[in-house]
View 1 (cartoon, one colour):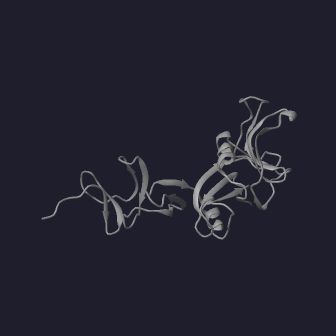
View 2 (view 1 turned 90 degrees about the horizontal axis):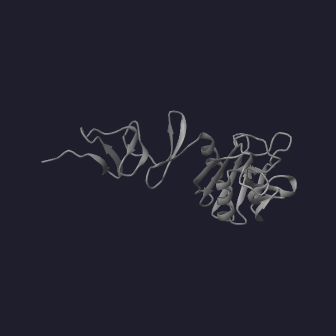
View 3 (view 1 turned 180 degrees about the vertical axis):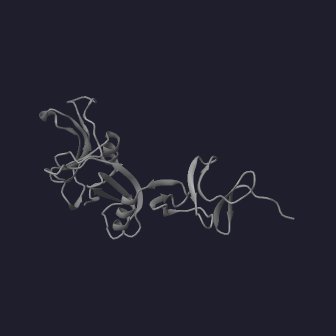
Amino acid sequence: MGWMLYGEQYIDAGWYYLDSITGAVSYRWTWIPQSEKWVYYDATSGRMCYEWHNVDGKMHYFDKYTGELRFASNEMYDAWSMAQNMSSQTQYLMMINNSACRLFIFQGSKGNWTPLFDWVCSPGKDSTPTVRGNYTVAARGLHFGEDKGYTCYYWTQFYGDYLFHSILYYPGSMNPMEPWLGQRLSHGCVRLSIENARWIYDRIPRGTKVYSY
């Protein structure tokens, strides 16, 4: 004698979500209250999706272990596809999409890069563009720019005077002078929120590959 199943169920090596009242298979987007996450069940099979999946013409990335939605970005998918043929001296790879004003960070190794972050940034403006090509992370420091009338925090060098760093603040303060991101307006560096600039400063090792395109 059988019985009705409800909620998350592992069936035939895949996860499904069965309606809490009718037991019907859920398709497409579903909020899992127990796990507090959005997941996507294939529109045809009803099986939970993992990693990259095209949903209504846009690429979405779902955690490869939990199925939780992490990113929704065709630009990040394109970067991830390119990244699979790249190597880095460390477990991280950074990719600057200058036209989209995005910084993508991947973790893993050649042929097995996993999306980690998709951050809005402000690369160089047309008259002072950010360099294109392959570079590596080198020096870093806490702040600079006071002699020029501003302060940028948590800088990380990837080529010559080209740096990742925070937005511009009034000298020696935490009051934003130029808070804008998502526009090409720097002198060539890559501006980020102070939180993201600090993450790079704290976590990205020397020798990490940076690809700017």
